[in-house]
Length: 124
Image 1 (tube, rainbow, N blue to C red):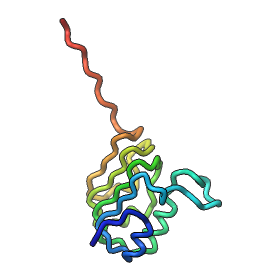
Image 2 (spheres, one colour):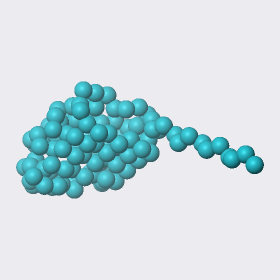
Image 3 (cartoon, rainbow, N blue to C red):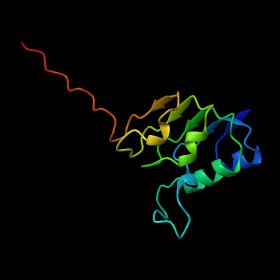
Image 4 (cartoon, rainbow, N blue to C red):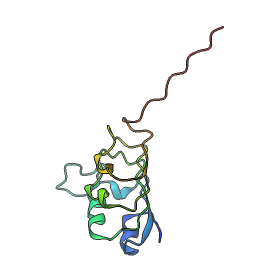
């Protein structure tokens, strides 16, 4: 198993990857002219890849920094997944696709992330 840094890598490696790192990736910018998200952040290419390629050994998925608002439905089938990094995206809530999966999820930098508590100034 190895690390893939693009959807093309996943295809070349025939899905034999333990980690897929698509941090701020052009692979997640939609090029489908029929998609309502064309030229914007979209998971349609990721969805097609996950549906066509056996990635049953995938343990780590990094989708950070892509301005995503949703996950592809096929994420639910990634039963070996142990960590998903969704930091610095635009998730308003924890994605429902993660329900039932036992994994660590990083959501910092999303609208759904709790804001840091303001600190009180010390009294003099």
